[in-house]
Length: 90
Image 1 (cartoon, rainbow, N blue to C red):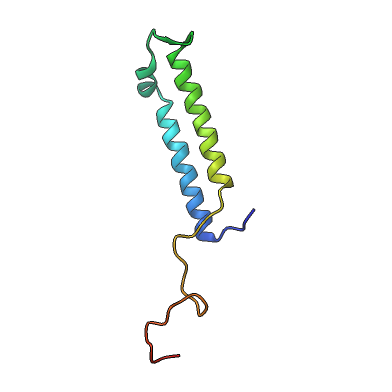
Image 2: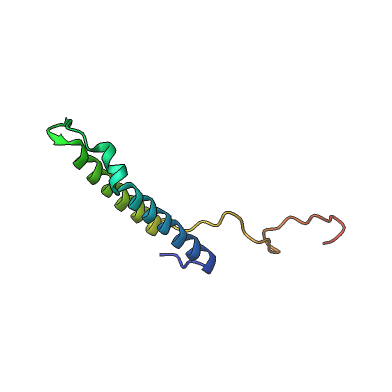
């Protein structure tokens, strides 16, 4: 597993917190009330499918965030990977 920089670790923590708060909001009564219908899908109540589907999505998204390598969006230029903007300087 790659070692995360402090900035990448902070970003990862923010992403995980966002996922946790989003799913906490999705699994509260007002949101679950949308799915509380007498309908069934394949013999299973729609509410149960919504709860377990959300739970499965939460687990998969969390696992992906934890295992996905942190790819920096941009790197600080160094001698080896920067383009010299001043052609007179070597």
